[in-house]
Image 1 (tube, rainbow over the protein chains, first blue to last red):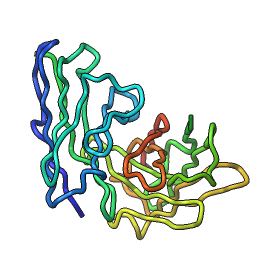
Image 2: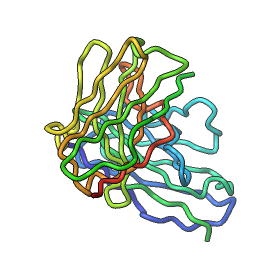
Image 3: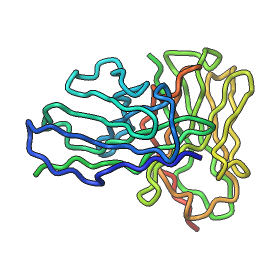
Image 4: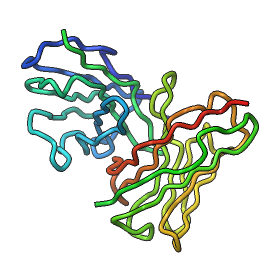
Length: 107
Length: 119
């Protein structure tokens, strides 16, 4: 089973700053199989990025994904007030696994 | 757009069986989707339980395979989860969800339902 490790656990930023979230896999993941989600309190996760770099329908272009192999990144170019929530990466090889999450908090 | 809604008891006794149903609207369970269950606990975060395709093919999390059963009811356009021999560690918010065939991300999610295991 591929283990995904997200860092940092908490990211403290001011609105308008750039956010860089990391997801590292215990073994190589095909880019097609890597996704990112946003989760607000009391809600289900929402798909942001799939295939490592493709934005899901309706996702603002301030969100972007990149990476390959074992290292993937979610970038928020300018953090808006509604972006201060939790983000998860996810992969699927023989089974589906999620990372432990990164909380983006207001500095 | 597919919409999903979980239903089932919010309280299950230890050693009992957790049973949840997910009603599918805006789409058909015999379409090209994998029908999925995910749970979330404060301690373990998001955990994939497993998925089923309408052909009957299933995939399960190896750690839960011995206790989890996912099934589809085509006549009611819904799918279900049964998790046997539950303990307090199975207390979680359970989400039903789906991903499109040949894709690897979860596109649609239900709102989630809290299931507590307690006597």
